[in-house]
Image (cartoon, rainbow, N blue to C red; front, top):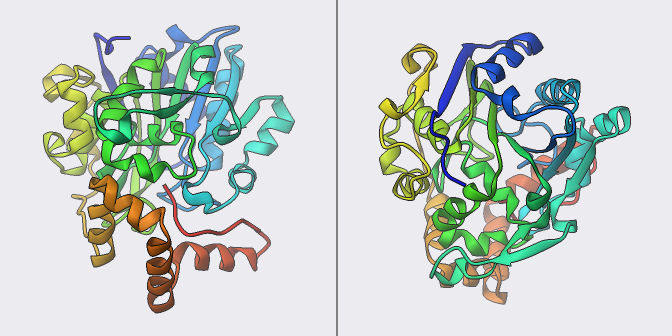
Length: 345
């Protein structure tokens, strides 16, 4: 599947969910031309935390709005997410906390943990980590793909937008072992996604560190697009980053999956009108250690899939604590119970 010939990105000020405004944004991007009665839609939110975390996970109110708009069009809707990295928390808890099980019970939609679904192994390049990648079979049964990312700074990939949100389509509890081939894998996944649509609620955005423990700040805008690569090129520019210095966006450009300039994207407004501030990436010393493993498969295996790595993590958490485990434990005291572990995707 080739990149959209007329990639569009629509932006508007957005401080509350407005279904009419959202529907108009989708219409402007041509999304409703692709979705009608009987269209099998696969919707991928970002559930990279076991409960709603502003700027980190897709909010329940906008998930409900998109669900209702799709159902109003007569779509057959499945919502999916990959399991938490290293089994860090229960996806059922994340589905519950983000309102998806309530939507399932109310409307009869399907909600699928991809780690419990059928997969086919595919090769996305010559790198060892790219040679046998699990890809959900459900993609072959989909007519339109809707992704709902956040606007985040990411300590490993600089930004997390539409392309990075595809990483959850690699349903493996140890998908971090594929990180060294992330650029090739993301570029390989894009052509498998029929009639893509991006719906990004940026009322709250994540600055400085991410993808989980950054600084949440007001964003105040909605962004909708009909092309994942073009969306990321535009939104990275809006954030203040050079898209061509971001590895997975540069790889998408080279693969013909993203334009190489804003001139190749139709925008409804000036990007700078929607920039809430210039985003900054601030890595910690722990981020730099993780980044070394992110780029080197052998080191990643040593750090995350070996007795040595398990010992190192125990020592690290004994000194500094496990922020994910501590956050989940705190939330559990208020009535949300989730399975805890050592990491996340």
